[in-house]
Length: 302
Ligand SMILES: [Zn+2]
Image (cartoon, rainbow, N blue to C red; front, side, top):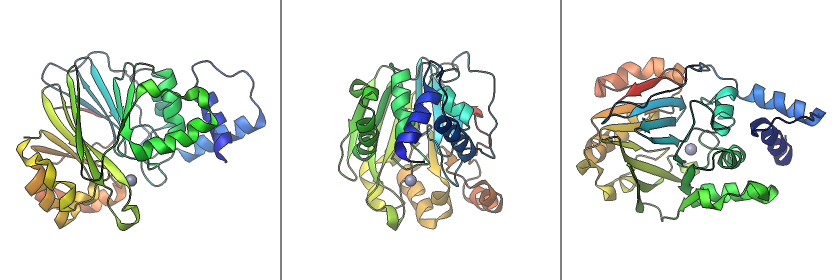
């Protein structure tokens, strides 16, 4: 499916007004998209979130892969949650993608949408462009590399441009910047993506303060010292760290956690579930309190 056909199909699917004319391309694209995003973990909890969590607590909802929603008081944040097809990785169901993109329950009134990097299992530029149009009160915050992928899509469809809803973090590798708004603070950490192939990819880490809690989400950051040493996270007294699966299995990753992050609690992200069965015991030996979200839309309160 080429980009413009895909763009048109997504535009029709996620626009708030239903398309009346359905041509063959649209129908074909529709089924291709549906087929590409069926997920083993496709268990949407139908009951929408009605009341916010108690004061001093944060409600965390698992979307898929590294995608989460944080809710505290009137602040609601999505992270790495909206993408079309994560290939071998967990992907939000079509229904969830549509609920997010149209800003329907349980994704109403999102204040900030954070994206760590542009990879397909964390982000999709076409869906995000449509998202911003449908959710004019949401601000997307991401880095320059993700923005350049957005620009390619917006060139094809300039009417989707929403520059006032985008805050682009322009940081050199290992730099940081803090953003603060009412009841929400985030420090952006410009970290290097794990793996040799992605050496040039910048993955934004997010040190988030909301609902009286401090949480870190490290995207797909690698476990080298430079990615952490300058940030002094060990002094931050972090409540919950959202850390990807391989980080916990590698002794270098564990060394980084123990020396530079020191969180009170760890939530595993980016999980290959069939491998988890094999390795969960091993992870538990090092981190007995580690937590895993098994189903899409599962919630926990911290
Ligand atoms: Zn990645």
